[in-house]
Length: 290
Image (cartoon, rainbow, N blue to C red):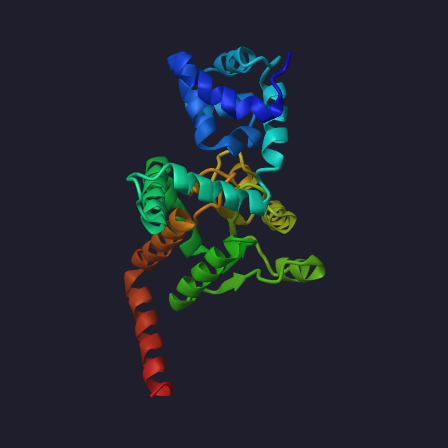
């Protein structure tokens, strides 16, 4: 008989100590980021954890499910109510109160410690080779189009600000609704680059932009959080920013660090051109803002 959805995570926490090494890694992976299991297949989950697909199946069966799909459905039911904004804030506050590194430690210290931990996880997940390939492709692009909605709008705005200063021709797809997005996408050409930013539930507009860019053969670079997310599956190159449990209020610190590193590396790639562009900018400031 299947485990009631509401009891899934509690049972997993209770059982993790008795699991085998491979199954324990899988359990910890799901507990650390429970939405990871929602956005993946048995094969993808096994690859992400570094275990066999049969281990994933046995793991689900040991929890009382027929297999991984049944376990996934149960987890979806349990998490649905936790992914609402109010519930996520409540859980974040409860976690801060419960899991401080030191008794009485202030909220700012706890949250900064969490950001440092997630930055370290982002660093471990980083492919330096893919990072530099992305830098080369973006620098060669005639124009750069950026799309990022919801929380990712802040990332898109910051990236546009930095790239304009390097005199890149940058278009921020900041009016994504309906026909306005189509009008902007019509400008995209094969020798341009599209940067897609998004996490967990990727908005339909972002998916549309990525699909169109792929259709015309445009280079697509993505920043997301999970290898099984839409952006990770579709992008030519993708980097992963860890954001913490999706049932809590997530952080954008690792994502901003990736964007910051990317824009500085773009400046380094053509340092003489970049310095000249910034000097021109300084001269404009001196001329018109005296």
